[in-house]
Image (cartoon, rainbow, N blue to C red; front, side, top):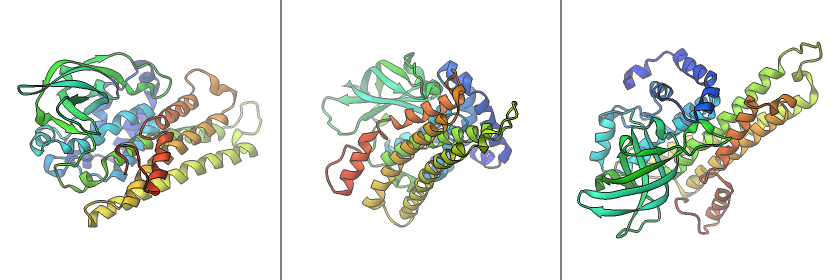
Amino acid sequence: MTAQAALAMAPETKDNVLAQIKQRAPEFQKLRHIPQDVVDQFKTLGVYRAFVPKRFGGDEKSPADFCRLIEDIATADASAGWVASFGVSATYLSTLPPETYAKIYGKNPDTVFAGAMFPPQAAKSVDGGYEVSGQWPWGSGVVGADLAGAGIKVEDQSTTLPLIAVMPKSKIEIVDTWNTVGLRGTGSHDIKADKIVVPREWTFIRGSKPTMDDRVFRYPSMALASQVLAVVALGAARAALEFLHESGSRKSVTGAPKPGARPYLQTEYAKAKGVYLGAQALFYDTLEEAYEELEHNDKVSRDTHIRLRLVASKAARDGAEAARMAFALGGSTVIEEGHPLVRHMLDAAGVAQHAFLSEGTWTAAGAAFFDEPTMPGYP
C-alpha cells in the first residue's frame, strides 16, 4: 500500500487491525514471533514508513505520533508493539550514505529492518567490504524483516558505538533461541552470519551523526530508540487497566456486588491509573517539546536531551508498576496460565529490563544533570 492510500485509510481499518492483533495474542505466544501477515498489517498502518522522508515515499511522522501508534499496537499486544517499534530503524539508518538510504527506501518505503547489535563480532576487511561472521542474540522482529543488521568490530577501526553491517535477511540464519515468559511473541532469536561480504557503504555507526538533515534525523537517535521501546510498557499497562475495568464492571453471577463497587478496588485502580496517566502525559509532552525545538534549532538543548532519556525510563518503570498493580487487583484467577493480566504484567516488566531503560539509566540521567560522566550514547 502506498503512503497516499494509507493516509486515506478509514479509521475503522486501524481499529479492525488492532482488534485482530488483540484476538490473536495467544497465537503469538505459541509461535514466539509475530507472523508475516501481521507484519504486513503493520505496513498498512504506516509503521515502517513513519519516519521515512516524503521524497522517498514516506510519511515523515513526528516521534510523538509514532509512539502513539506503537502504544496503540502494544495495547492490543505488547509483543506486536515491540516488533512494530522497530519502524524506528528508518531514523538510525539515516547514518548510511544517502545513496544507500535511497536504494533501501526509494525502492520500498515499507522496508522492514531488524538488528542484533551486541556483542560486536570481529569482521575482516576484504575486497568489496567487510567479511562478517558470528552469532548475535536479541534479534527482535528478525523473522519478518527484509534486512538484518549485525554489530561488528574491525581491527583497523575503533568506535565507542557499534558499527552495524546491513545484509539481506535471506543471507543470514535465524537460530531458534527465544524462550521467555515476557515479550514472548517478539521472536527475538539469535541471528547467524557465515562469511557474508558487506560493502562498506552498507555499514553505519549506531548513534552517529546522520548524513541527511531532516528534522526527525536531528532528533537524538538513542533517545528515540529508548522511547519507542518504553511506550510498549505504557501500552501493556493500558491493556491491563482496560481489562481490570471491564471485568470490574461486570455483575457477579452470584448476586454479589460487582468488583468495581468495592472501595479497595476503586482506590487501588485509581492509583494505578494515575501512575499510568502521569507517565504517559509527561512522556508525550516532552517528545513534542523536543520536536518543536528542532523546528527552530539544529539540535535540542542538553537539558531537553537528558529529559528525553529520563521520560523513557519513567514510562517503562511506571508502565510496569501500573500493570503490576492491575495484576494484584485481579483476584485469585489471575494465576491461571495464560491469564491476560499475567501476560500484561510480564510484558511490561520485560520492557523495563531493557538496557536502554533499566536502573542504570536513572543513574545516567542524574549524572548528566550534574555534568558528570555518563554511559556511551547518553548526553
